[in-house]
Length: 246
Image (cartoon, rainbow, N blue to C red; front, side):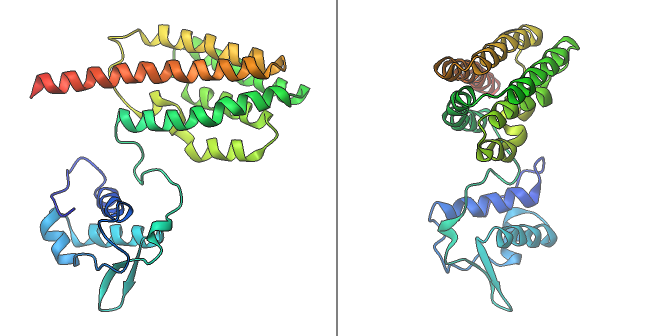
């Protein structure tokens, strides 16, 4: 934990996440006193202000408590930490893939439920979202916001607000091309990729609005599994490139 912090990252988030990982893994047990401010300053090579902000973030998360004149300690109920993503988002392609697997478990059923419960109003909302996505692709943009809005329209069509809340919680993280920045041109051109996923979205919308629950589930599963496979290939290529440069 007490190793120098890389300067390219948000220092407060880096330290907070590092300590949080030690707590969640059980390496820092409840009641354990954290290193002093001075120890963290000297060992991590950061300012006292950064350390204080990191500890404040951990306190806000309920992971540590502070005692006047005694320092910071791991909270007794730190193991009950609620579900959340990293404080500074997803740091690697592997992290993105983890979230994509989580989405697959939720969104395939979301699509099926949306098909079972489709109404004229929700069908119209899905159609509008699909049109906006198509228009954004035609303009040559990344279309991440429109992609996210389409998935939210499917979630809304379930009639269960918890599906929409889940997607809103994930936010930008459900659209990989907005979460990570890597050179994808070696696999396919950006336009080829967007055209392909546009077809996948059309298949999802068609099955949902037709009331075909099994078809909607399969169309969403295919869309998400295809994306996972693409980013796994990119992750493998990134590792190969990194190895070659060592």
